[in-house]
Every structure is written in structure tokens, then in C-alpha cells.
Amino acid sequence: MNNLEAVTEGILFVVGDDGINLNQLADTLEISVEEMQQLLDKMMLGYTENEERGIEMVCYGGRYKLVSKAISHPYCQKLFESSETRPFSQAALETLAIIAYKGPITRVEIEEIRGVSCDMMIRKLLARNLIKEAGRLEVAGRPFTYTVTEQFMDTFKLKSLDELPSLPDYGNPDENEELFG
Image 1: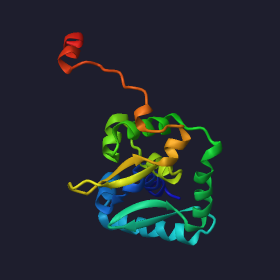
Image 2: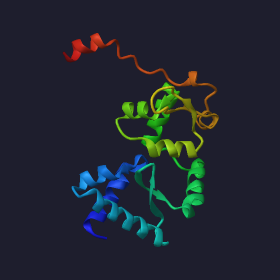
Image 3: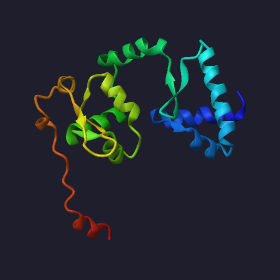
Image 4: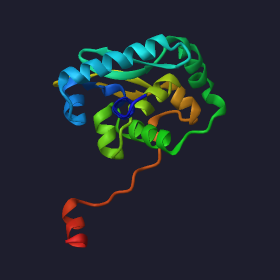
């Protein structure tokens, strides 16, 4: 694998499910669109032909991304379904708390609160049946909103979300300005 391939693979890993388009990649790597297309075609072929790899490169809607190959899907599902025995990570608990307190809430709103991307965490929580899609907002892009499930309630032994501890009251913004002003 040459340097441009390695860098491209790293970029595709970092952009995750959002993917990246041909022009963005070419601009980032400072090569022509034609050179970038040839490199991507070569890489896609390499992923497809190598049956020993668990990932492949795809292009959907003009966006390139890395995805797991279909052969690994049943095992990934099994991994996520065995949630009973695994403790929750700090990131999972933070994301669950935000959805429980603020739901229905969009992924972008969760990310604004946490300050980090949460695509993978939302997928994991969906796979573990702790959250569910609650609908779509009637705004540009029609993002999904998420809420907690009955499985969440069972896992945390809650009869209703009213049993969640109260959030601390930090006062109004004017009071905070006096403190930090």
C-alpha cells in the first residue's frame, strides 16, 4: 500500500458513516480528481478481491466510505446482542442519559451536548435495543430523533423516566455572567 492509499484509508476511517466525496478527497490530498478517482478505483478493487479483509470500500450517493463486509454482520449482531454481560462505557452512559433526559433528540443535538461524534454509539445503543428511532424532524435533512426503549427501562429498573434523578439547576445565564464576568 503506497502512502496515498494509506492516507486515504485513514481519512475514510475518520469520516466514518458520513463518507467523503471525490472532490473533497482530491482537494485534501492535493491531487487531481482524475488521479483520486484512479486511486479509489484501485483501492476498491483491492478490498473486493481480498477475501481475507473484513472491510470494504463502497461509494453510495457519491460518498466513499469503509464498511464491514456482509460476512461479519451476523457476528457483529451477536456481539451487540450480548449486552447483558457487558458493562456500559462512559460514552454509552453519557449518550443514554442525554437521550433519557432530553429525548426525543437528534444525533446532532446529542453531539452538541457531548462535544464528540456519536454515530457509532447510537448504532451500538440501537443494536442493544436501549434506544429507538422516535420519528423524523420536519426540517432540512429530516433527521431521526431518538428516545429510550422499554429495554432501557428494564435495564435500569425504572418504572418511568420521572424516576431519573433531577438535574442540577445552574441558575439563569445572567447569574452565571456575574460569576464569570
